Image 1 (cartoon, helix red, strand yellow):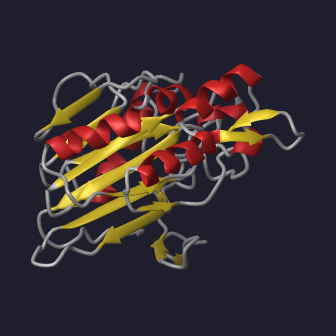
Image 2 (cartoon, helix red, strand yellow):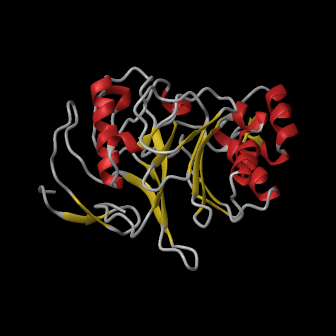
Image 3 (cartoon, rainbow, N blue to C red):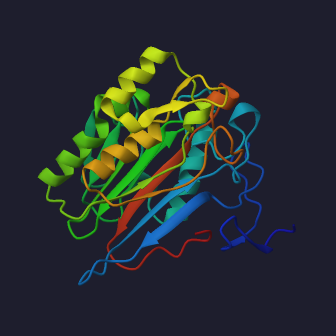
Length: 285
């Protein structure tokens, strides 16, 4: 396909091709694996945009081939930063208003109120009520969760692996958001490794099931396994949070990074932003 041509992405939306160079990047195509704009609540003019990136743009080399956004996985730091700048442009925010986390599989929460110019915060959840600040969670099998309450002006991004789900990162963030004024929360649960592909020793299954019974699973071969996303969905549903669960298993979908499938690899992102006015007119939605 020649530069400048237009073709439909995986969801039927037009995506314009083109060749731009970012370090080792060969070309840039569709950034998002899935993306949605949520209509404003009655009486509000702000909207919320959420999405999950894929690997079909900014192709690098080796195990990080694609749009790797992870900064601590062995990839070239300049390439990763170029990829993050690309993401910021595609969602229409300045680079310092795209906030990542240094994730630790814990329950720490950080709250941001504007542009972030310091070190990447160490946390597994980030919250903001500032408009046009995009929050990002990085995963390669763990569960990315995006929360929003446009009426309260709040959005959040959560990283939930087995340890985080078991430790209660999701209910802890819900509690904090409600302390900040959220009353009409909604959630988007992104793609992650499915239970059939996440074989673990039986004691780990029991620990996860104690936190969320729905996480108990069996692998493709009938061995003990954990479905972390099912556990997350149970925790959200039990707290009466309406949700959308984006389909897809990271280990089974080559458009998504998966440590279980590939070993050392890159990270894709779940990203959410609340617009003060009309949604950003992105190239690939």
